[in-house]
Image 1 (tube, helix red, strand yellow):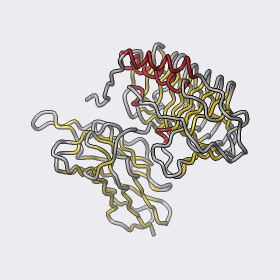
Image 2 (cartoon, helix red, strand yellow):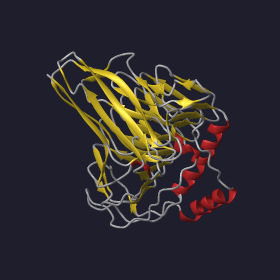
Image 3 (cartoon, one colour):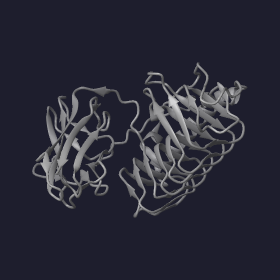
Image 4 (tube, helix red, strand yellow):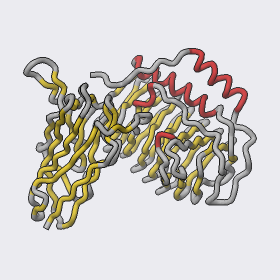
Length: 388
């Protein structure tokens, strides 16, 4: 079942974006303000993503992976021909290598890149981004941008707040650097338009959608909550976690998630059954439009072979698509986009779990983790397992 909505982009939209890029450019902008401060106005606007929205990773020439990378979302390549390292890397979505879907995603990536490059600059960046707290806006540099340490993006309570970072050449982060969201900031609304190539340092925790003209390299252990999209060059991965958020879907109360452990208290080394209940109060079935992943708290692990689900697609009478569930590894359990919740009904994902050490294990699934054709869960689901 293909759950990716292919969005049409009329030629006039691309022409308008090209014109905007020519007349606006990076802009004169204001000079850097004091460290930890930012402009109090915002010209930034989050562009409407096309088919590239479903891709966590998209390369132009090659995509190469080393180690146990996990890509939540689609993996694509166009016009290149070489995707290597999967497995051991894991892709929870679809893989599109030099096909029509990948070509359309690259076309849409180019349109979004031009849109981002054409937004008028609010603030010129001439020093490292580390240690700053930035309010929404367009931040530009005619050369490179660097990040050493933590960059905080403060939405001030506005869920539509957007940040656009424009740079003429490279984006480089140092080891252990991070982008931190606060006061309602959303990874969907953070964009990095890179004039050449981006390199994320070892164990960097990065947020936002990277649109690079050339290549993107993620060093060992770097993670991205967003997208890694290279127009012309290679994407190189090394034991990374890249999670593409599903954007532009309003939460609705008719899609809910519940969670429980049974029994709720076990001895160390014992087994409890985790049950995640997905409910749909709509009159039509709710198809998952992206994977739902439940990350277990550290120390709590899935018993191999114990996961199952009733959230399956009925093909014909008496037959079901039983591939609608998966375990990424022993610390995660979830559903692929083949999952289905029946109309005016519910289904479950279950797995036996165990822990070697005593403690209180709080398992949380955040609001919006379940994305369906009928909306997403507006409230989080929490359950606690006590291990004596």
